[in-house]
Amino acid sequence: MALSARQIVRIVLTVVCVAISLYVLYLLRKPIGWLLIATFLALALSPPVNVLARRMRHGLAITVVYLGLLAVPLLLIALIVPPMVTEANKFADNVPQYSRDVTKFVKENERLRELNEDYDITTQLEKEAGKLPGRLGGAAGTLRDVGFGIVSSAFALITILVLTAFLLGSGRVWVDAIIGMRPPDQRVRLRRSLDRMAEAVAGYVAGALTIALIAGVLTYIVLLILGVPFRGPLAVIAGLFSLIPLVGATIAAVLIGVFTVFVDFPTTTIIWAVWAIGYQQLENHLIQPQIQKRTVKVHPFITIVAVLFGATLLGVIGALVAIPVAASLQILLREYVDLRTMSIKAHPPEPRPPEPPPPEPPPAAPPPPAPPSAPPDPAPA
Image (cartoon, rainbow, N blue to C red; front, side, top):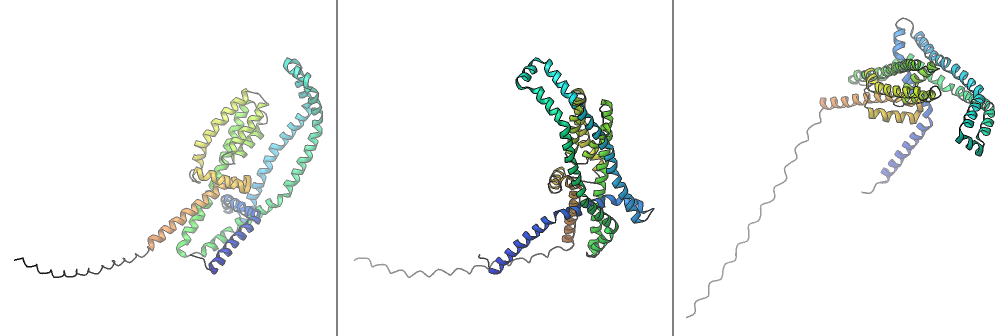
């Protein structure tokens, strides 16, 4: 059937409106991402704020929680950066000695000595080693540019913190106003759904921090037993990477394994690799399920898809918030399905009237009477 002119115009307008809406969402992707992150932080910080609000004013409780939140990254930076800077300077000072050691090793090895005579490897190595301090100075300039970039992104951080503070201070009032707009029979279920979402997010954050703490402490103990230097910063790195779902612990294990290569290869590296593989199995099958089974109940397939989508949209932050967002959407979907089911049971659709029986066919007409038969011919004489 051909479409009318009005239907064609309606379809075109619908497509144009959808395209414009998607384009506007694309332009506003950063503020929308900030708002989502602020909402996640507000839900995660609500439990400690509510606990402190019982003993002090609500605004003061938010301030105390914010100060604690800002103190954590500063403490981590103070713990990680100074040893790394010291070791980098020490490495730069010892590069000429490393070059001489390599040259000595090459001269003592007959095969390498032949290669050196053919390609002049040691001379090139010494030249590059002499240029390394200057290159490190150039790298310092690059790091300075990166630092300026980080400072320039402070606006986003301040915006997120301000939005989070507003949500912590007035979010409950806005939620009550939104719930009040719904019909009375839906308010209780909606409030229960929002409370479950808040519990899921807070539980996920608490569980993730607990897992990160366990990973950091156990990493420190193992590195202490193995005699690996800088075990404090390495343990902090292991704990931080454990916050990234699915791949964080693996990345941390690989980084620390590479570091152990320069400490005592292969003994320490092999022991660390065995420990890292065993701990990941322990975390995936025992620690994480036991900690988060009562808060976030998301299927592993949905978890993987959510993390991939979140990482694609918002990077590492998106991967961090993907699982609680998926859990919240799952709660909303479950409540919506339950509400629809209850509505159908309370107001079942009226049964359709029975269809009338088909009309009976008219009786068949009687067959026409047979024509009278002709009299028989008289018999011949």
